[in-house]
Structure formats: C-alpha cells, structure tokens
Image (cartoon, rainbow, N blue to C red):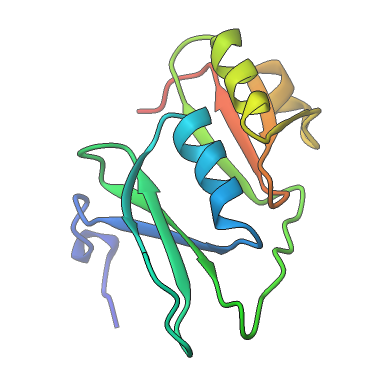
Length: 138
C-alpha cells in the first residue's frame, strides 16, 4: 500500500491503453494527423497475442498503447467523458485540426462546454475524443 502520493516518482512513465478496431486508422490519426511518433508496433500476427501500436511524443513521459486481438476483439466503448486532452498553451492551429480530420478524425462539439470555450474536440476513428486545449497546464 502506498502511504502518500510522494511515493510515486513524478517522472514515472505513463501508458494509456485502449482497444482499437483498426490500428492502421488509429496510426493515421495519431501519427500522421496529430504528429506523434510510433514507439512500437507489432509486425506480424501471432496467434493468442494482441496486435499493438504504441504512439507518443518523442522523448515524452507517456504513450498510448492501442491494442487489437483479432481472435477476441474488444469493441471500443468511449463515453463523452473519455477525453485525451493536450494542453497547448495557445489556440489550436486550424491546420492541425484540418490534418486530424484529413486523417480520419471528426470535429465534434464537446459534451462539456468548457472544452469548446478553451479548445477544439476531434473524435478519433474508434470514437474517443481528443481535445486540443488552448490553456496551459502547470
């Protein structure tokens, strides 16, 4: 049991894992659209194992692991509160938003009006929402 939050190294790497129905579509959105780097990808199908795509910022302390098991697929089940928020510290570049849409995203009104006030929401190919927030964090 952790006695306090101080027991967790603030530099610890974070992985967020989500199911995907189409890893190629997810890669187009997050790599070609958002500009993240592929950190790992499975290159061959191995029975009993998941297909993986890991994307994140070069040198960053986090990454997305997108998974697909063709033998037992898990359909993504995003809710309006499952958000991936990127704090840009400035208004989102419309060229970036257009690139996300060109690579499989859909510009979406936010469920919470806060996100429309301070950014742009784009739904990824699996239905999860990416928020490009104009505010800074920290």
